[in-house]
Length: 167
Image 1 (cartoon, rainbow, N blue to C red):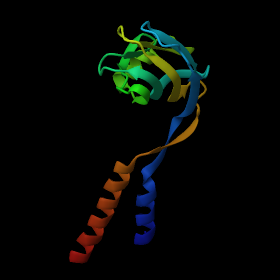
Image 2 (tube, rainbow, N blue to C red):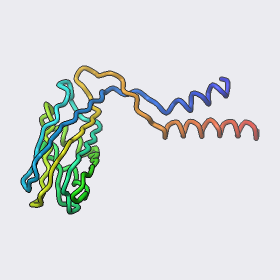
Image 3 (cartoon, helix red, strand yellow):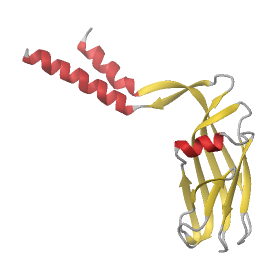
Image 4 (tube, rainbow, N blue to C red):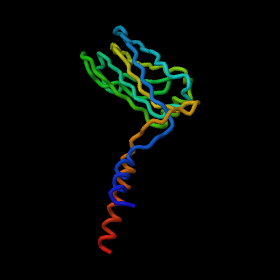
């Protein structure tokens, strides 16, 4: 095989297809300042059978203490809001695979998000949820970057060129 073609294949090997779909949902929570738990619901597609990736961005005011304002999805703790004081701040949370499995094992018709302010007054502005999920209908291919594979293939290719030049 021509070495140039092999190198091109190695470099483009960083994208693979997996079965799954992507979905995003934004909720304007617009809660009042409160020291009581604040909850809202993100809808998810009806064909979702398990969540493989989840990112939630929560915009909030009045978060004064770290590790204080607990965030949970369907009753599963996923993290804490970042401190922002009196200004508007954004917290991005991405649960690990074990937490995603726990969330997937709950009712997947919707995702209920709850922030427990732990006694301090705060306000939630918006919540943006992005998920990748497996569906019961097989889904459509989603391109997922896998740069590590491309690096390994490129190193193997370059090593073979060096080996044959030395030989």
